[in-house]
Each structure stands twice: as structure tokens, then as C-alpha cells.
Image (cartoon, rainbow, N blue to C red; front, side, top):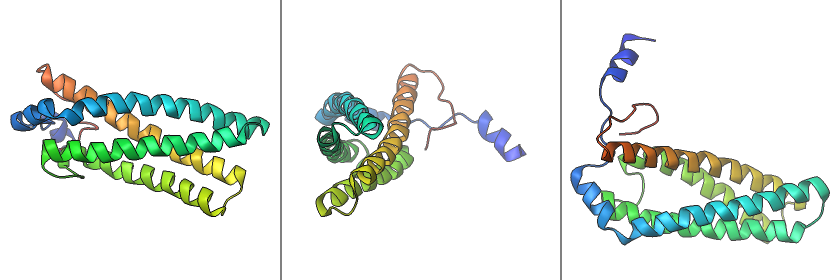
Length: 172
């Protein structure tokens, strides 16, 4: 590692929220909405993933698997729209606030893949197997994105508890 890398580790990480942003976060009704929608979306994802994998493995239940991806996509749209409103409440911008820049960037890929699934389903441009594989690609990016947000939530909790934030994985 270069000297620049070592120096970065010695510096404390920038706080995730300023005092004003933390106050706005705590006062925003969208914080609760996000807290409810995130686990609901994850539960939908788990059910859908099971249905998709079962269909790929056995060829059975294709209609349920394909429909479950639509439900998962609708849940994604709901959390993205309300998340953007939350970001505006807290940071003053709908997307790409510095504290959540990389999470929002990956979210765009997640949205693009889920939307491509809907478009392919609607137009019939992919067969059943192609749709299911596209759903798996969308789900893989969703898992990465969900992991980003879990790490960010953990960092925010550590910051709130007065513990120093780790510099890796936390954007400023």
C-alpha cells in the first residue's frame, strides 16, 4: 500500500449524517416507510427467488415465478420512489446525495435490470428461461445493493452510538 492509503486509514471517516441531517432523518415520516418497505421487499425477494430457482430446476410453476418477479419489481419501485423522497427530506436532493452516492448508483443498475425484465415480459422478447435468468441477474444486483444499505445502516448506528466509523465502504 502506498503512503496515501495508510494516511487515509488513520483519518476518521466523515460522519454519515450532520446533526441537521440526523434531525431531519429522525423527523421524516419516510424513515419509517423505508424501515417497513425494506424487509417487506426482502421477504418478497426470498419467495420470488425460491419460485424462480424451482422453475429453472424443474420447469414447474413458471407462471407463479414470472408473476413473482413482477411483484418484486413493483415493491422495488415503491421503495425507490419513497427512498428518493426520504433522501430529499434528509439531504435536500432526490438522488445521489454524497452519503448515499454509491448505493444510489447500484440502485440504478438494479432498477434497470428489473425494468428490462418487465419490458421483456411485456414484449415477449425473451423466452421463459431468458426471463428467469434476467430475473436472477436483477436479483444478484439487488443483493449487492441491499448489502450496501445494511452496511450503511450499521455505520449510521455506530456513528449514533459515538463509535468511530470504519473508513472502508462508507462514502462521504
